[in-house]
Length: 67
Image (cartoon, rainbow, N blue to C red):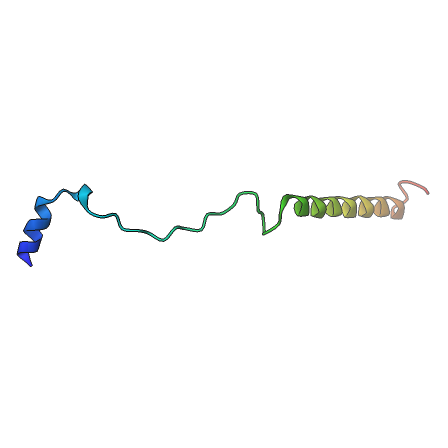
């Protein structure tokens, strides 16, 4: 055991074989919640239209505008 320790001390550290590590899964920055850019655009347009329709409905309901 100690002979092996002495032999390893004589060899430089950089000459050892590199240990292969399992590559980590890299996150793609373009995917938010697993959606692509066109899918996120469609969701944002639908959300915008829902807010506009709700706003117009509330303005009519509170009689701030008339049809």
